Length: 241
Image (cartoon, rainbow, N blue to C red; front, side):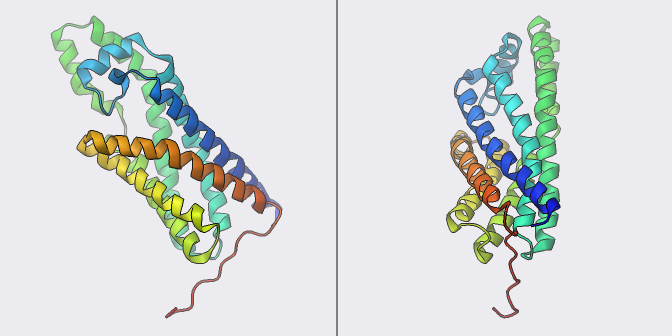
C-alpha cells in the first residue's frame, strides 16, 4: 500500500469507528428526548412550542448527526480503496451520490440547530396567524423534505459496496450482509418519513441505533487492519461466470 492509499485508509478507519460511536450518542440522546420533540412522530402544534423550551438531548443528537455525516464522507474513499478492481464505475458513481447525501444531512441538522430555537420562540410569542404561518413554514426548514437525498442516496451506496464485497470477498461475509441490512434501513427511513407510518419509523430507528454503529465500527476495524497491507484488489468475474 502506497502512502496515499495508507492515508486514505487510515482516515477512513478512524472515521468509521467514530461514526459508530456517534450513532450510539444519537441513540442515547433520542431516547431522552420528549415525544413532542421527535419531529417524525410529533405534530407541528406540539413540536413548535416544545422547541421554545429547548432540550439538551435534542441539541446533542443534532450535533452528533452533523459529526457523523461529515465523518461518513471520509469513509467513502476508504471503502473504494478496499474495493479496487470490483465494479469501480458503480463504486465511484454511488460514492459520489453518498457524499452528496451525507453533506445534505450535515446542512440539514446545522439549519435545525440554528433555526429551531428562533422558530419555536416566535411560535410561542405569536398570535393565531403567526402560529399558522410557522406551522406551514416548518417543513421548508429541511433542505431535503423527502429525505431522498439524505437517506436514499447513501443507502444506494451502502447496498452497492456491500453487494460487491459479498460477491468478491472484499471483507467478511457477515459484515457485507449487515451492510445490506443497513442499506435497507436507510431506504426504509425515507419510506417512513414519507408515509408517516409509526411502525415503520420505529423499525427504521431501531435498526439505525443497532445496525449502523455495529457495521461502521466493524468496517473501521477492517480498514485499520488493512492499513499495513495492500487493499483487497479483486479481479472482475469473467464473462459468463
